[in-house]
Image (cartoon, rainbow, N blue to C red):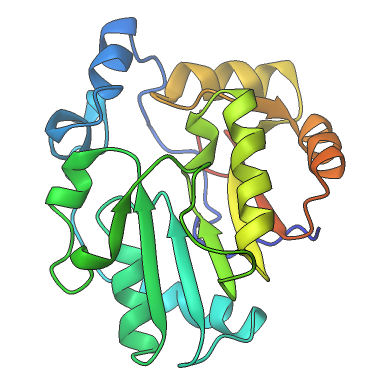
Length: 219
């Protein structure tokens, strides 16, 4: 159960991000529709479009998890499929699948991999035991409540040989307050020690990364 930093979040000084989202912003975001992905920044991404950034990050992941053109890979919470697209570009012979639990990003997914995205809850993965060589869940599973997060981790254990996901975490009260003021749909935000206890209870053997107010450079 190692901690793994894929270096997605660049180490830099604090940036001026809006950290006080209102309840109206959060309700709007939870529709998980066009406004969340491609609408105003206060309600979500402010425009969620492909930029190829994962092509620079995935080689490190491919090496760490010994992935190849024969690998079966699942992106859990794949959104519009950007990670899937870049995996396929780097490993064209691999079998790539994605799961997303709402329609807008699937309807607007990258054309190369759109047919490989399944509409399903993250804790209902329609594949047999140990089907995937690798499962990645980047900035996805912690939007669920604690019970559904636990069920999702159990499913990840079931279908994967190796796995990596990110979860929302904090080390102290101040970090928790900053993150919760900023996040729109993050629901299960736990102390780092509590995440580790949960992983132990669920017998999670894969890798993880703590997304915190510090890691994403929030003031």
